[in-house]
Image (cartoon, rainbow, N blue to C red):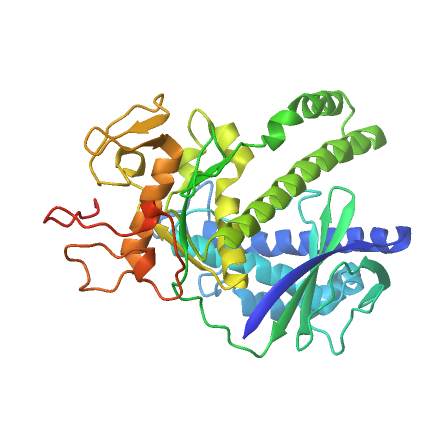
Length: 419
């Protein structure tokens, strides 16, 4: 089963926009009510069995079952009679809000932290329509239950053979989007290793460096608009809360953040397609960028968005039939890509000079070449590691490459990767 998500810009009129905002508030109330039931059930079981606590008492009978997803979904018809406002929202959309809560609860139970939180006003900004009888999208409009036809910018048509399964309506700043989930009864195998390999090293001084010697400067999306963002945030902080002027100032700040996000994502997609044009196998480091974002250069790491860039490269490689893999990141900048010797250097040293073989190149380019070599060793067939290491000239479909990428014989000892 092949599943894709296409996002389109939609343009609801004032009445439709007001109705969807009202639905989001109703779904938020249902979400918070269901979460309150879960928290009350958990709090009632926190005190000791032989005494009563002042904070947590058994306000719920001991034989009451946990309010799981099935029970809360079955209680929705009763809740609609008590709260007629719930009937304004389509039943399936309201059910998806409860399912969203229990997805977060299961995630919390699985990893042991991250208890679901209550949604404040303005924090519930999506509606999920999970089922359609017919295709709701035409050339100019998308038809949603109880809303009607909404103008849509269908900038790319839905491929033939795909059917629309569900639609999620998103609100970002004052703009509306429709994320369309399409499916096709088709199995696409994962791309196999083939062709020309390239390694990618990402960093703050240079956004990325490839094993081919290509260097890309960091665009610094947030830093370029930081002064403007600071001005708008200062104006927002001086407005009276919940006033109309405060809402206008908040939308201006949200628009600027949305512009930064769109610009960053567009840059990532363009770089990913450029990498796929150059090579057939793409290798990147297996790093946890969330930990790196908590350091001294956390703001710059988040501005670059390396985690999002890696996910986009992986998706683009899969879509275009290119092979993608992650390799061990330890010591990539302290290793010579030609002879494999360890060359220790500080972070301030931006030039790689090997004292053993004399190979000299940019530090980031050398790291990218090490990543490429490790990726080739990762996909090499077991048992071929002898006097030579498998490289691009041994892979099926590989063309004539540069001299650096041709496998060279080692001096009686096969170099092993560090663990």
